[in-house]
Image (cartoon, rainbow, N blue to C red; front, side, top):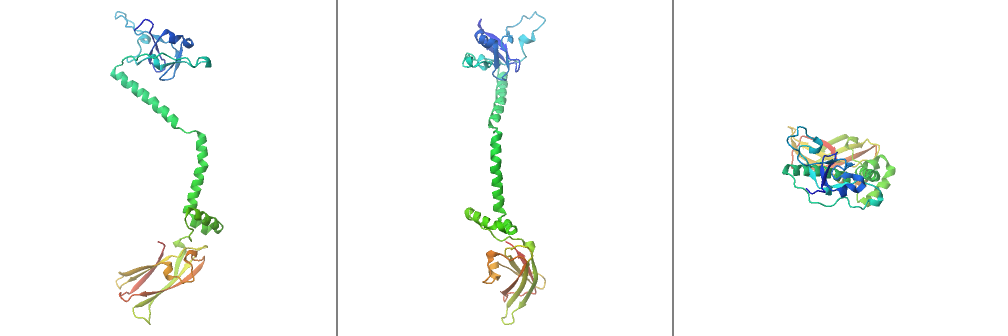
Length: 283
């Protein structure tokens, strides 16, 4: 240790810095700790690291410091903020750091990593104005997504909105279809008879009703033939295009509060059946 070297200790984190009288002369000795940012009087916090004689019974805790001392060079010590005239003054002169013990080096790395993580977290935090600007955009995106997924239901319950939805779908390359609500459909009557004029040919007569106050999509009709033991012999599903007449428009939907009579001819010459079931569904 040279004659002009002195040591000062930060009262916040107890880090000891090696300083010179020239450094302490700036700003009347007021300095800032480069680790915990505490501003303190470097002159008043001067400590001595010289060994004390063993015969002295009393120990100066302030002079000796804590059992494990982190010794830093003056490069980590900055002058306290002052007026603009001396902002460009160099804070400290670069000096070679003192060697430290392995345990002390580990503590220094852990301490620096902790504060580096906190500074990085603060840098990632966006201003409140950014979140405020993003909120309307998110609301619009949510509304657009709802219009896309529920466009059929919206057009059915609010017919006035259907032209707008059709125009939007022309841009998004989608289509507006009649709503599919199987709970609003019912089978009013059904009958399966053999065609007397053609052997092995069955005639299915079916009447279905739309009980909804708006048009619905035409359902699929499933016919199941069973034997005397109620075992399934054959099952067949018919699409709307197979049971609708040429005058009906499948895309227009099943009119509200209306009934539809269906008549299907089924070739059952290769089967033997004793019963049947009819079921409506949407694929």
